[in-house]
Length: 354
Ligand code: SF4
Image 1 (cartoon, protein in one colour):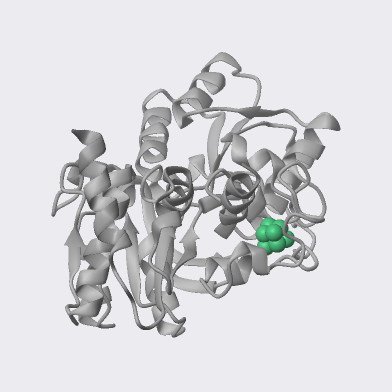
Image 2 (cartoon, rainbow, N blue to C red):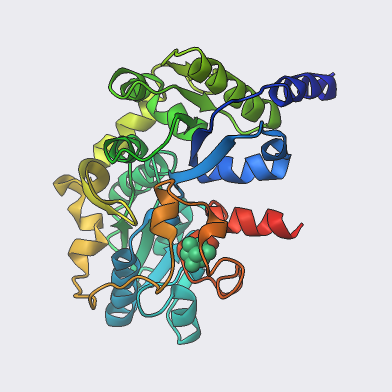
């Protein structure tokens, strides 16, 4: 039954004929991967182009964040905890992986609560969590900070680097990047709700779809976008209603803004976007590593020849980068887009080779 259902959807997509180019941006790195993995990208109508967006947190984190983390590691000798993706990301002059081999204590964790437990069991060490993510992970990190306060864990802090996705989409629209429609991340929307995306239709007259991650979700999202685009209907459609509620997850948002407040933030390849980052509020400043461990990192620099910035703005696709698959490979990445599992270059490379 499931198989037949997918086949019917796929046949509908295959039957569409476009007489002009349509560019869809999948904002989220998980969608990038799923379009490849599921094979849905292979049945796109001719002239339908999928471009990547700024939805890979590791990719959009500017080098100066990692430079700062490494400087803190060198100067204060803490235990640095992080999600695995960050280990291989090249910083301006090194990487966490390289620093580990030089003795820096860096540990991969799967949840910020693990970092909290490490702090509890190592009262004589400082534990720093590298807090890089979007609305999906930031509430859990806020809970960890609230919990650290409750437990009086003075040796736990986080280096804030979280970002908010809607302002980045708005920045791309303001920059007039050529995108006709948007696939909006379902997991981010599960937290922040549907209505926050209305600006895409109301202010920029573009259709968008909140999409899930399974094969039928992907096909339905593209069919829905094409229906709107070809019929001049500019709406935000929620095609992931089983998880995304109109109002989002109010409890998660409440936790988020208990600890964080919005601030302007620098995005790789895009620049500074107003109110697109999350800073720790004064009332929790004792858990802010950037305040507790001051450092002056050397001036940041970008990897020579890397075109991650243009990728994250939907201007090019990975094969347009001359380093793709030559000097830039998953085992020796030049830029972050070839590191993260959500990075567009990783997805293109992985599925190109299979
Ligand atoms: Fe950067 Fe490598 Fe991607 Fe090129 S292929 S944009 S160098 S990450």
